Image (tube, rainbow, N blue to C red; front, side, top):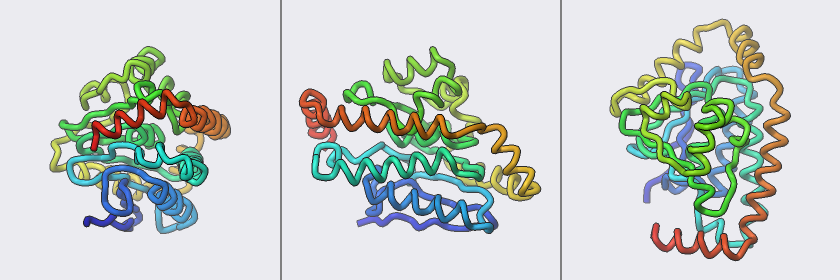
Length: 249
């Protein structure tokens, strides 16, 4: 069984892999907890100036673990872990870059809205099928997506569930740069190297000014999570998720 790569500090850049602890391209409760812990520690570590998020080879992240959605005994701990990660991302004080190679689905896509730059391979795709599942968006993307994509682009992306190719995602503003698949991580690390050379205080202060007040994001995260949790208690939604889980098995 494959294992989750550990965060790696390279010249003031912390490289973090988005996957489950057993090496699957999904996020389960333990993965949410691990990512939140990593970001909490990185926020306090002066050696870390930039974080780079990456996925597994050929796939960034396929979203949440459906088995946890369908098990009501796991919901309380799952919701707590998800909320902690999203609030941590919303308030993280340092630049976050993402290198996406392959599919970014569901939460594997919404976490990208908290990144300052997304660098994608030309084979990458982006999809948020929450409405199709009977769920609402997460990670405060009901605020961040209209800001980044415009209302019409966000409506199509979230409500129609359109799949965006890399070029479409760049045209809308989700992706900053597109590079060939084999060089996406090196491209992100190259941008990180540029950032770590900047005066630290000026960089963090400028980013903070650009981000603005993050309390509204945290409040929206709580609202989205509440609606998400209500949906997981709905019999129709659960049956829909069960069908999707069987098809994916």
